[in-house]
Length: 163
Image 1 (cartoon, one colour):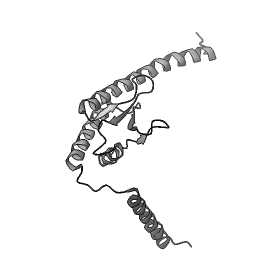
Image 2 (cartoon, rainbow, N blue to C red):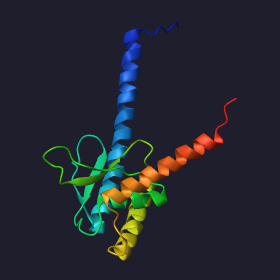
Image 3 (cartoon, helix red, strand yellow):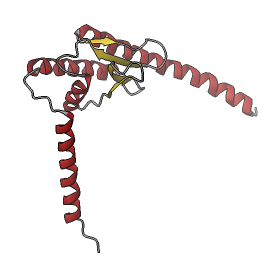
Image 4 (cartoon, rainbow, N blue to C red):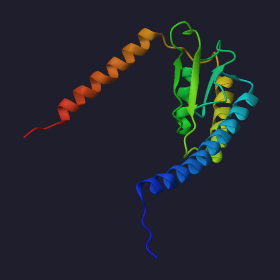
């Protein structure tokens, strides 16, 4: 028996096979996003502002931003190895600052649970240190960054030897 695969048959097989696989991947991402959503909401620190439909992502803001900001929370999460972007919303909503986590295929339930635990530790530490730390002004931060880069460039010039 000779079997000939035509372009139409190949397309049909790929479309149906990939479609089910894609559905499975997306459902897994949505399930992990739900775990993350429930964990973050249960902490009591955050309001989830993203919708449940569409791209599996979670955007959330602080309920009380008077003691610290989402930018400080995101920076503090880095000690656990997490890079969670924090930013303000676009025009007409600049007063809302959020953190955002996109749930990709490789973001497992275990990672979601670890992020929840690390976020809980971060918030506990921030509560313990809120008000104790000196908040730097924009001018102080700018001065520190400028000094850092000037030293870095000066050291590069000293150490680079061109033949």
